[in-house]
Image 1 (spheres, helix red, strand yellow):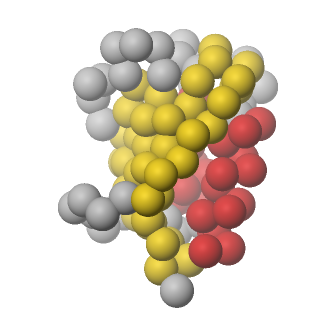
Image 2 (tube, one colour):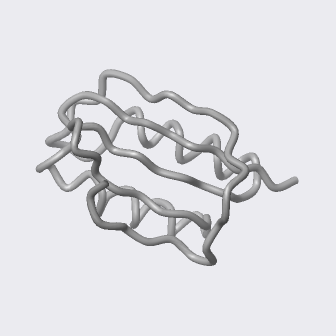
Length: 92
């Protein structure tokens, strides 16, 4: 079954390679979606894929790349448009 989630990640998540980390993990899991920095210092992402892969990426987000310090990962269902593949978007 395919699931789509919207995620907001807080903590030290900008300037530490977080978006590149997310792109690599999501592409390895063959997830669709996108990731971007937000002006408020958080990182926002949307993922779509099989439940097992979604759970895996959420665990990876809690760890983040070595220089990150994740304090929270909030998720909500997502029903908006979904691109094919996974990419980084410009800051919003």
